[in-house]
Length: 133
Ligand code: ZN
Image (cartoon, rainbow, N blue to C red; front, side, top):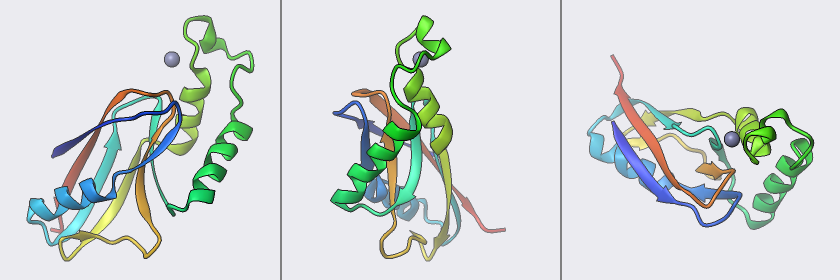
């Protein structure tokens, strides 16, 4: 198991962690298996999709549309970030990626992102690589 530590710089951000994940998988020495990429945070998520400037704006707009900020959420009685938790709930906090020949089996346009939903903060992402049995 390895931990990828990152510092996010914006309140909501898609941080490309593909190079870090590839490094962990390569250095694991595991040729065929599966990699778990797991965020241990309640206001962060892990997603896989394309990294294109327009799309990155579209992702943010989708999150703002689905879960608008300050909509009278109960959690905001004790905190101010219910929208961050709810967006994380929808996206999910982990992904599994097949490992093929020491690399994550990503398609041409696929990138692995940590999604910051309540930044800026220090974040930890666990990567666990499991060998085929
Ligand atoms: Zn909260």
